[in-house]
Length: 153
Image 1 (cartoon, rainbow, N blue to C red):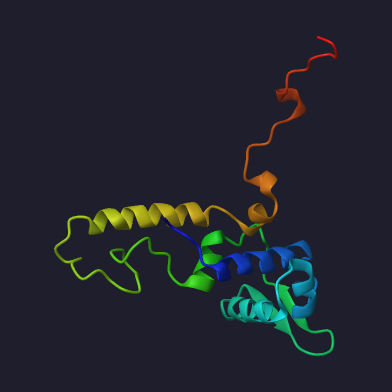
Image 2 (image 1 turned 90 degrees about the horizontal axis):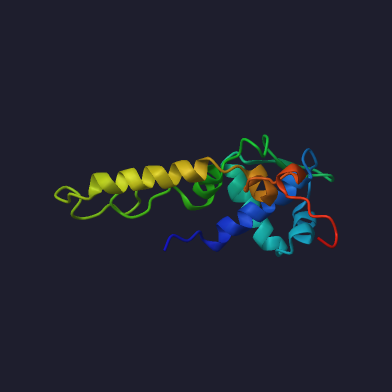
């Protein structure tokens, strides 16, 4: 099973809170209050996200963190890679941290690259804006699409 680590979940929560407060600079204590995460966890996540240019920091009395860029153009793939490193479904794909020991004679290695590319493309197609607004992830139904049944019929 593919599973994102907990720090990636926290990163999405922190980015989501900052996206909802787009343009504002928030201290880690404020972000912790908004998200329910501990302040040390927020600080750790924010530092990682800043190092990957997803957040910017402001120093001083009114300092804190601010989202860099538009949540609509920030992909889930970029967030995952900021926290976890390159996306690799297993050790056989290009860019894996622990390459497979038999990749030079394995007939599956090119197939795993195809699978990995497909997974990465799917993650790249989901934006932070969609993650924080679940209605964006699903096809919306308009009132015109719903059959009208008068009361009592």
